[in-house]
Image (cartoon, rainbow, N blue to C red; front, side):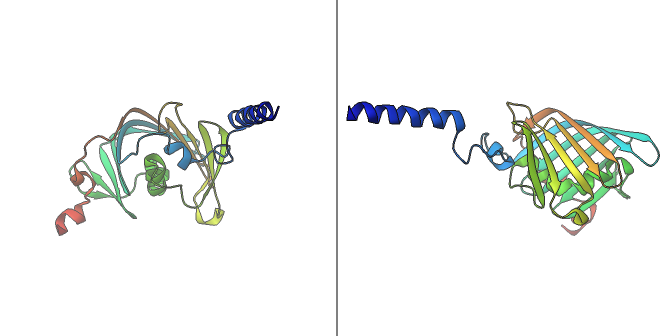
Length: 208
């Protein structure tokens, strides 16, 4: 009887574990999700972006390619509406034209530029986004809200992941002024070889 009791207790414990999971697995997080996949050091993707500008009731479109390298390198190459590149290496962000000359930040990518550092952290899974609270709507959709509203230009950021991949297919950023930026990624490549020179800004290249 004692052996049967132990067996029943063991089966009950097994069922409870399978049904409810451990305390750690019951609380989804970006870090836990990233841990399900091989570590990412680099990533590239094509993107299409829509930016809804609330004050003028206008939608700005942009498209191009996105390149990321851990821990903090980020490059956005626009092919439309005009050719230019946004390069972020650490906290510095530079915009250059097709000839490599510095430009002011275009309105099409204002939201993305403000989010460049956090976006790199999120996409590469290097660490949880600093200053944001995670609210998971389902296993593959999370809404990030800033912990200190005054310190962030965003009211919320929604990430929608495919069930089988580590990078989101859609990113929606809502800003305090009412503007909304939607980025859709496709043609994603994980851990491709990258030339470090792609992340050099004109000033860095002159100093090297």
